[in-house]
Image 1 (tube, one colour):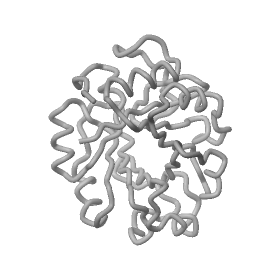
Image 2: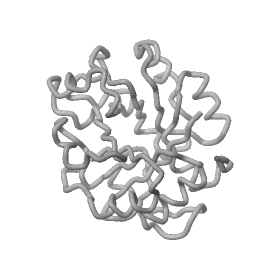
Image 3: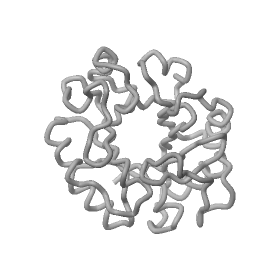
Image 4: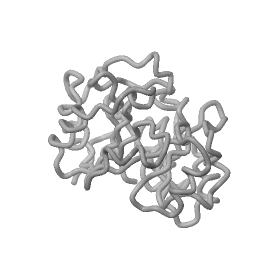
Length: 226
């Protein structure tokens, strides 16, 4: 199971995600490292997981503000060996053109993507990811991403927002349901992982990787070795 550490970025600092309730997010308090500076936390997370990929949720941009370019540049410089997966609330595929660089790959969230025309532009692509977002058992999906598996790119994130930061365990039922429709696509889960046993269960359900933050900051998962 590949671990992809996560940074939730708001106002230039790292915050702790709680059930996707973004108004409740506060600057991170971590047992892994001190402070909430994005570059310092990126280094700590990547080193702890021996990770080659870091996921960044730009909450300012997701909520309709500007992309936090300065913070992204600092993170990129701090972890030169890593790919960054960036969700910046892209409404249209062309919106990601401002951040496209060799080490940044855009994540298009179903909660943000405008319509079916935009979704169709992601069909089969291997240079972007689609996040299938849902909360409370309901898809967050104005573009109909969940239904149109023929338009899915080669990598999918299954994001259960109400389990993010909740310590309630991974949503294995949804991972399995998406797996049955995903064909050969790579599945990445998000939300709920508490410990190494959860990661094993997620792998058994078909996830190749998992986005993770809270369990790392709480030192609930042992460090990985590169």
